[in-house]
Structures are given as structure tokens and as C-alpha cells.
Length: 575
Image (cartoon, rainbow, N blue to C red; front, side, top):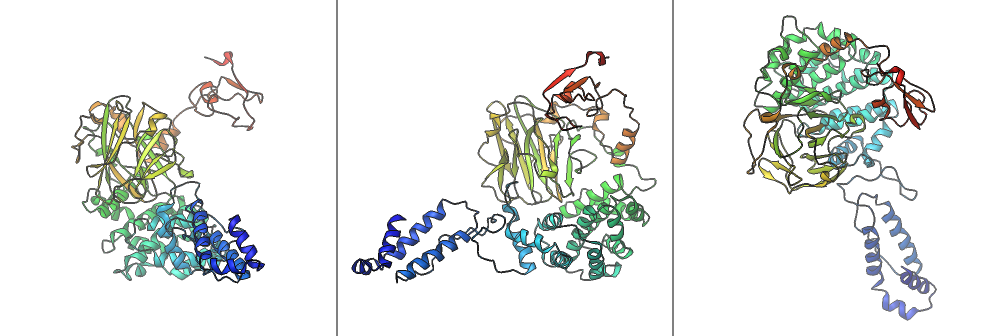
């Protein structure tokens, strides 16, 4: 660059006219090569504003030297990778896109958002800024309903992602939205041949019901909207419309007044019919059946109906998903082998069986083709559902992501060569603790072994998975034959695990809460675990409502937030 600057400087001063004439045809190529090398050292997702500024500054320099340099930008930013948040100090003002274009841009790049610390794409930022006013929020919501295509598996997740990050709507904005939508039973029957609009409408209503739980949710569930959602459960509706109408009703029922209102509509009669789709070979109808059964067991109870957990046959099941070691919003089937997430958070679950040695294998059937991270984790793995951290996001777990075609370890990802998974695909998971390797399979086709996790953990592995919104899959731990068993000798969880009859029961949430209310807690028990005796004093603050086991896991006092320097067991408190 110094050589170029000297050439331009002397040329501009007209000191070497002869030399200028000789170099006149070479300077543009030299400048272009230097610009390309500069961009090669920058981040691949960096905004291209810097390149534009460099081009403009070089143009100004060459204009002064009377040498024409054509406007030639160095390698443009990869359009698949999202830009960093905001504009740099020298970034030119962008041309404003219409809302529909911004929504579709967000949908196009959502698969590339692979880093929890990665800045959101420009389209998302712009939509969030627009939604800060009532008019802008209404425009964004209407666009989500209008343009998200039915066939994109991440469409509903994008609706949830965008609305969840937007500012809360005002009461006036909600009222205006209900007037614009003008929903009722007749509206549910209109445009039946174009189900995308209805799917998106029900997804928006469900997201708002979840986000506005409370008085605002009660006001949103008007008689017209309730009628619209109930009519959308009819068999004349498209299965995806039925699914998201049911999910919306579930989320409205998070507010007790709405739950009573929906229950009084005799929704349980329709759900009993939809429950028959639980094992339907059509994976979309199977989702409807799963949600219908879950709602009948947990929310909209029908008098005289036996709970599913009371009649399901668990005789041959010795390993299942652990309902006591799961993040709060994940739905688990009564037989413990199928899981689904309909929340806006990243929900995770582990298996009941842990392995320390040998070679182990299990399979997963993909019910939905969106974002899930499935693989292996130890008991040290943390489920931070609201922060978006799941399996593969710490050093104690490794996961396969078939939607974004990635392998995850320690919150870092690398691409794999398998095609995107689709509904009905079978994913195989082999753990070889002798050779310290994990192998992932898609319909029997294996990837190269993964070994990174063994630098942090060598035993205590569980099968585990994390789910983005509206995702579902079924696990096979060996209770039935595998579709694509590996060629090497392996063991299955179901052959070696053991569960008592009580441990196999996955209670509905209302039954679980009723049991918790019956639990008596001693006066001197630890305020965190409510199990051990509070026998430890934290110093220097002096608080002493904890047991030593819980105190050792804390760095600051949970009461005063003061840093803990020492922990002293109070012998007199030990029974």
C-alpha cells in the first residue's frame, strides 16, 4: 500500500508524467488485487460497507491523479451469511426494503444463525426496529401471515423468533390486529385451498398468547378468535392448520380464565377424534395426534376418559426419556420415547440410562425436519433453554444437527456431508467408549468419527436431545428392532437398563403438581434442594439456610449476592 500511495502521490503532483503514462493501464489491476487481499483477512460475515468505503476513497485518489479506475468491489459478502448487527461508523445508508422482503430474507438466512453470540441479520434488526411503533408492529405481523410459505419447515419457527424478539404490542395494537384479521368461524372456511395463510395466522395467535399470558391474553381470545380456532380443528382443514390451531389453544390455556373458556367449548370431544392420529404414518397428522393426546392428558380433560399413562403398555420398555431430568416446556409421550417442543425456548432432555464403558447404539426417527441437536451428553451438561444452549453447546456433549447440516461440540459447529434430514429419516448414534469415538448415521450412511468430547469426558454418557420450536422426534433405545444397525457389535440401553413400574410413569402436569402439594418440608431443610438439613453458614455474609452440598455449588450468596469466601458446617444442626 505504501508503494501504491507513493505512486498516486507523485502522479497527482505531476512529477513523473512519463512514468504515469506507462503505469496507467496497470494501476487498476494492482488496486483491485490489494483490495481483494484486504477482504480475505476479514470475517466472512462482515458487512461489505468497508469495501464500499475503500472503493470510494480509492476512486477519489485516482480522480486526483487523472487516472480512471472503474468501480470494482472486492469479493462481496456471502449472501447466505448474516451481517453483523448495526451499521459501522462509515457504512452508507441502506436502501429500505419492503416488509415482505425483510421477512423472506430472515427466513432465507435463519439456517445460518449457528452461533448464540452471532449478531442477527440485518433483516431481523430492521423488522424489530419497525415493530417499535404500533403501525410498524401491525405491518410486521400482517407480513408474517401473508408471505411465510407453507412448505418451509422453519416458517412457524421464524414467526415465533421474530415476534418473540419484537417489543410487546400495546392494547391498541392488539385491538387493531383483531379488527384487521376479523376472525370467526366463517373465516376459517375461507381460502381452504390456500392453507398457508391460516397456518401462519394460528401460529401468530399462539405466539402472542404465549408472550402475553395474563389479562392481555384474555382480551385477545375474543369469541370470534375462539370460534376461528375451534373451526380450524375440523377434519376439512389442512392438517398443519389443525396442528397450529391446537397449539394456539394450548397457549391460550396457560391463562386460567382462558383455559376455562376453551374447556367449556367442548373441545375435548374433537380432540378425542384427533387423538387417533397418534400413530398415523402421515407425519403431519401424527403431530396433530400427539398434541391432541397431550392436551387431553394435561389441559382439556374429558370426563370419563382414562389418562394415557394409565393404559399404555410399558412392559418391554426399560429405558426412556427422563421426565425428571428435562427442561420445563418439553412434551414427552406417555411411553417416554417421543418428545416435542412447542415453546419459544430451546428445550432439552436426557435418557434415563447412563453408560460408562462398551459400545452403544440408539436410533431416532425424525418427525419434523426443523432444528434439533441430538446426540450424547453427560450429567455435567447444562440445559439453558431460555439462553438457547442445549446438547452440543458445552464441552460435555456432542450433537448431530440434520437441519443445518452441522456437528455441534462446545457451542461450536462444523458442517457435515449428509443431506438435510426430512420427515421419516432415521438417525443412528453410536458411542464407542473403547475407541473413544462417536459415529452419526443418516439412514445407515455414516459420518467420520467424532472424538472432541473425550478430552473433557470419558464416561457417564446419556442419549440426549434439544429441540427448537415445533420440533418432534421418536427415540428407539432397543425396545424394537433397529432400522439401520451398524455392522460392529454393540449393546442397547433396553437390554441393560432397569426401571421400576413407578419410574416408568410419566404423570400429566396437573397430577405432578397435586403430588408436590402433598409433600411436607421440614422447617430446617435447605432452601435450595428442600431435602438436606440446612447446616452450613456462608461467610462473610453469615446466611445459613443451605446444606453443604448446595453451598459448594454457589459462588455468591443467593440471598444477598455477596461473594462467598468460606463455608462453615454448623455441627449443632446435624441430626
